[in-house]
Image (cartoon, rainbow, N blue to C red; front, side, top):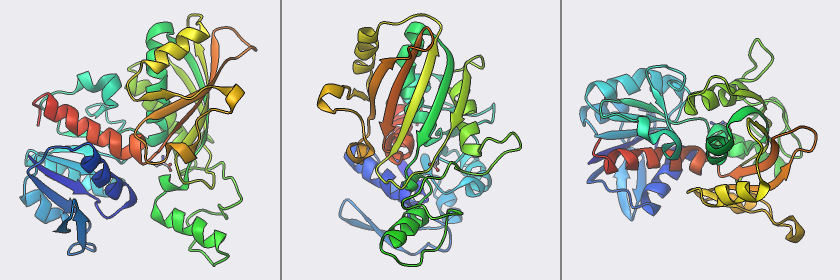
Length: 329
Ligand code: 2RA
């Protein structure tokens, strides 16, 4: 097994390396890949030093799996070149997610859809992954009619330059601006670019990707995505209307029995999910479970996860593990 991590020098790239190590992902050879600009750089993994290589050199190495986290344009150009030499690309960018010929995979939900000839597999958007993982067992039991989601997203979702902007602001230094405004002590109702319909691209990702992952275009979704000056993970307020009525105790039990989901819901003792506690954790945390008393069959929930983990690196490594375990790679 020859494994390549493309975009190894970035924030998600280094998280992928941590997750590969923690999950003891089996490989014989590891290629750390980045743009030609970063080629030659040294990175260490498990006490061993690696020299970062460029993309053309990596294609020539014909890796079995390449986990990409290098942005949409790199992926559009290079994923097909890897696929052509037989590599299975697991891509973190939005480049291929809505391509009808590509699978958009959260292994616990639709891993079964993967086939041996899939060559480019899309990893969903971070804020979508944590929401659908928590909703999946409830959808199975009660059916979903409509989702209203508002997010509170970590600056790590934008990348290292955004973390640097926030930290410089905290120190009173002049930052290189990534966001149109100051992010520290502020809240920006603006993630990714605005679309002609008034929604942002991040909001449209949540809407469209949810339908694709659940393979159900009839689910109605509306989203407001917001950037907040936090680092540990993304938080989401989710209001979900089911087709059938539910029992709150049963909801708790279904969520507690879902692999990868942890229920933290004890308001009397101030127990609820927070990004501070989700940081560096692979699971999705759910709490504030309560009936929406304003209309039937509707539940309110609060969902938190480390966006660099289950929202990116962990999900991608889990897809790779699924392929290995099912002899597809
Ligand atoms: C964000 N969803 O948090 C993005 C990262 N993919 O900005």
